Image 1: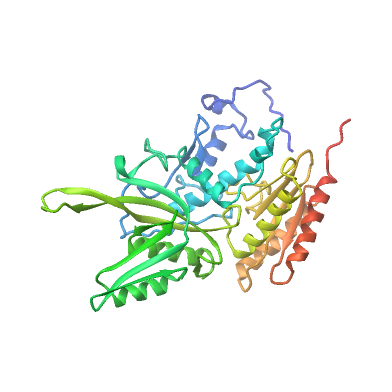
Image 2: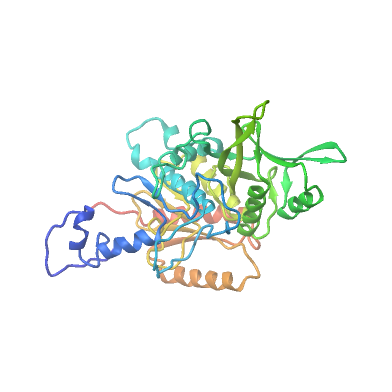
Length: 407
C-alpha cells in the first residue's frame, strides 16, 4: 500500500461531482476516472449497475460486410486511450462470465453468518450458466435503454441465450433426398466445404435445452472461426469439452397460406459466440486452463475451503493482483486474513516467441515480488497433474503463512 499526503488536507466526498477536487494521485480523481472509463468497456454506472459499450447494435441482425473479430479477452494493459474502448459480443460474453465468477468467489464475504453452505459453494456449469443468464438481465447496453437479456422474441423480435451446446445439426438436400446429420465435432473449414457442395437448401441448427434452434450459416461460420482463433486452431468438440453457445435469436418471418400477410414464425440465431469452460462454467483460454481450474476449484470444494479461500479469473485490471504490471494473471487465489495473494499462471503455449518473452517477464516479476505474491505456475507439457496438485497445496499453505497477527 502506498500513502500520499496532499498539502491541502481535507475530506472530499466520493461522488462523481466532486471528482475534480480529489488529488491527482487518488483513484477518485477526475482524470483517473476518465482513463479507467475509457479503458474498460464494461464498467459500473453511478447506481452500481454494469454498462457495456459494444461495436454492434446487438438488437438488430448483423451486417456481414463488417468484421466480427475484435479483441477476445485482452490480457495486456493498454496505457494509451484516445477514444472510448468498445468490444465485440464475444468479448462481452467472456467478461460477463468472469464477472459472475468473481461475484461467486466473493460470496463467503457476503454470507458470514449464513449457515446454508450451498450459497457460498462453487456452482457446477448448469447452475452457473443460469446465473450468468440472470446477470445478463442487469447489464445495460450503452446508449440504449435495453439490457443484454431484457428482450423477448414475442415482444421485441430478439432474444438473448446462454446455454451449453450439445450437437450441431446440418440438413441438406442431395439429388432431392434430405440428408440430416448430427455433429459433435465440426471445423469452420468442414462447414464451408459442406456449404460449397450444396449451395441450395442447406440448413444448420444447434441443440441446447434438448431442442434444436435454427442458426444462419454465416453466424455459425463466424463463431467457429472465432473459436479456432481463440484456441490456437482447436476444433470444436462438443463431446469432449463443455462448450457454451451465447448470442441472439431474431424473429424469422414467413407468409401465411394466402401469402398476403407476413407473420412471426420462430427464432433464428444470427449472432453466436462459443466459449470453452471448465466443469464449474468458468471461461478458459485453453484445455490446460480447464484442467488447472478444475483442480483448484475441486480442491476448495472437497476440503470445504470456500469459507476462507476464493479463486477467480480476472477480466479487468481493476480486479487483478498484479497491480501496475502490464498483464492479467490466469487466476487469483486469496485466503481470508492473509497478506500474500496467490497468482496462477498456466504456461502451455510452445513455439511462440512473444509468449516466451511474456513468460520470462512474468517469472522475473515473480522473483522481484516474493514478499507480495505466491506464484502457482504449471507447465503442462513438462509437469504432470500430480505435480500440479502438490504445487496447489504448497501455494495455499505458503499464503497462510502470511496471515495477519492480531496485536
